[in-house]
Every structure is written in C-alpha cells, then in structure tokens.
Image (cartoon, rainbow, N blue to C red; front, top):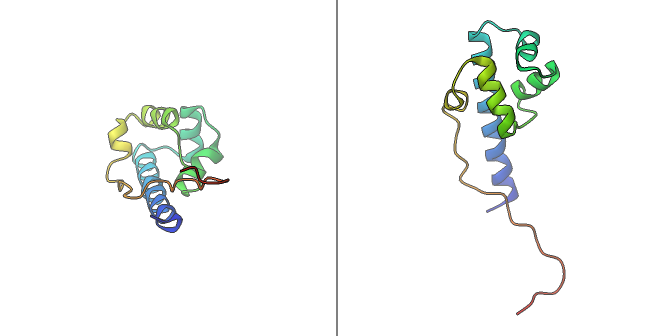
Length: 97
C-alpha cells in the first residue's frame, strides 16, 4: 500500500463524484447558484464539489441528495470503491517488543 495509490484512487473517486453532482444538478435544471440556494450552501462549495476540489462529509451528501430530490445511492452511483485504505501513520519513538 502506498500514499501514491491511495491518493490516485481518492482523486479518481472525487472526479467521478464531481461528474455525478454536475450531471444531476443540470438534469434538475439548477444553476450552481440556484442549487446552492436550495441546499443552503455557498455557491463556491458547490463549485468545489463539481471541480473535485472538496470531498463532502456524510451530512453534506444527505443535504445534496435531498436538495436534488434524489436518493443518496443515485448521488454516488457508479463511484469506484477504493481498494487502498489510508496508509497507517508511522509511529515515532522506539519500537516496543
């Protein structure tokens, strides 16, 4: 497992989510600003999600899906499931045996 693999998979995941959120927003007839108003979020936050610059937390995912009138599974449909997990942090100090 490496940081590079983890980061590459995370980037792929964020780009796939960005495509989903943009497509669903456009299908719903929202501009970014109108969607941000509906979700009670700042327009730049919507832009960051659509540019794969920010990863939403669970409560934000629920707000986005509710504002779009779609289920959460529709919002994340087709997203790749990462095979790598976040690399473990290296412990500092002497190893105990």
